[in-house]
Image (tube, rainbow, N blue to C red; front, side, top):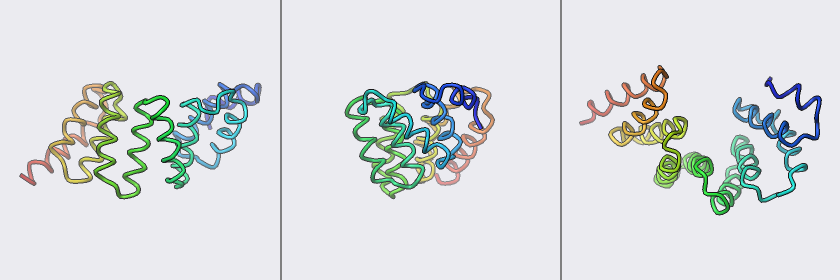
Length: 169
């Protein structure tokens, strides 16, 4: 499933390999397969309050639909680290719970903390566009396209949001 499988097989107690295997599986949305690797990372980690560990656990919980528990860990991550990934995950959780204004605020904070992250910029744009706030969304889409000039998906989405903005004005 990932390039990390041989490393984990050779060194099953290597924290770094298990962490990267878990991240790869979470990125593939394979939460069942990621679970044992997240558990192994928790077991091997010397610092249970490490923000990377908390964010890893929160991502797994969020993917499994355990939003309340994911929210608690995301908030702990923000308090200890304040990284854009935590704001983004917390924003996604708020969106899933129907707290759209809160979600938009959190994505704005994530985007401000990671102006060179196309993934965060595009998610902020998508969230705003989903709420019909196309003019606001365009700014985030444009930033994502500036970062990834050749991403045809981002370009197509930007054009679609522009058309929606014109149609609604």
